[in-house]
Length: 627
Image 1 (spheres, rainbow, N blue to C red):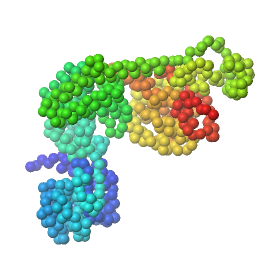
Image 2: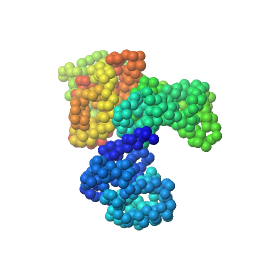
Image 3: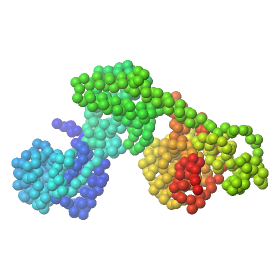
Image 4: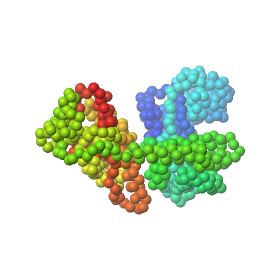
């Protein structure tokens, strides 16, 4: 047979070609370079992660004619003979088919003979957990004290089945599942060498379906190339894997969100007629809802799918909250468990769809709708501006900070009448534009501006929260830079441990980075009071210094409440879907945000307890300190 499968053709021949196992290859290279080779190794980990491949590379490394060397040369007769299997001193044993005590006794008897061609005789025992208890006992003594010319390499996917007496006699290396990023990188190398035409999204889909196994990923690419030699698309990958396409998943979940059970069941029937398994449909829907849940609560990470940038996905995710997602996931998980043991798997998925869209008065679906409706009304009520004065006060020149402080001190000593405004006017020395004491009366904590803010601060937000900043970041968005910053976001706190920066570094580090254009970023926070504090000129200067310390470059930032950014991004996405570019957005409107562009930040005394300063930084004017 002339054709060789891609996963065999591109099996790594040295440690540098191994993907995703740097913690193991580095250790083994150092051991080879320093001639510190142990007598027994145990390689454990998921399938297709490189256990047997690394065992063969290691066997070449210790027998290379240029040893000690950290990587086999793959050019000398020893390396070439081991690679093509012509040297009989490298023995590979499949423990699944040679698991009896007689086979291991035969191995034990042959161990004492010297190798015929190379320096070390290497026994690679694959799936070693399949050996019988008697076989393990027969191997035990030889494994503990083998001859100087023998090296054992045991490979297994289930180390928990091995006796502790075997594990304790080996150097153990735990192989990890290979990340989506590493799999994509390796697949692109193969695609380029083989000149295979494939969509970028199809490569990503293969990496996701491989579930951490490089061999599975390369095998899937080989199968897809045989299925469609012209151009491999995402639909081709879904077809050969039996998976549900993204559009069908969107169609079903959208129908469920509209409480349209008929449309959801009809879409499921079309998939079943097309050859999809019910269990696979259920599994893909769980994965899709999980993606929405992760996107809404975690955001982008290095392994996130390009699905997170699909406009239809973003629009659907904006209509679903965590409560509804967990409700759907619970029903689908239960249906998946029932499907495994049923002769009518389709029935359970249909019942799950109907329960998700049940419109009866006492149903869970109607209760969920009522809770969501009430929550929306409550949110609108809480955001309603309050604090209307009890009686109108004629406009007057505003007192200075010194005058205000004097009045407060006299008030504490009982020397001021209850009408604070009258006493302020009596003791005013010269007009000033500094802030006044807030007028008395019940005021909402969320809508009450900080005492350090001007009353005119509420009128215009464009100086503190310019929409041009948001437009530039979204229009010139750099996803790779954003992901890189998110991966190192912990540096914001770690690189700013000095007392003068630590408090604000912790505050900025608690935010969520949602967009980046390289030199400008947008950070969201749960409350507007945090944003108002961070956007004061003095604090923003500290914030830029904090970001520069963390990422070693100048970065400007804008702090926005999560709900405000969600509204702005929804407007941007809708415009993008209509084909618009260089999009212009509506100005930012939020009753809780303030124009703090002219606020002078006062220094906190060093004697103030750290817990108090941290609380003020986090919650702003909501904090009341009792002496």
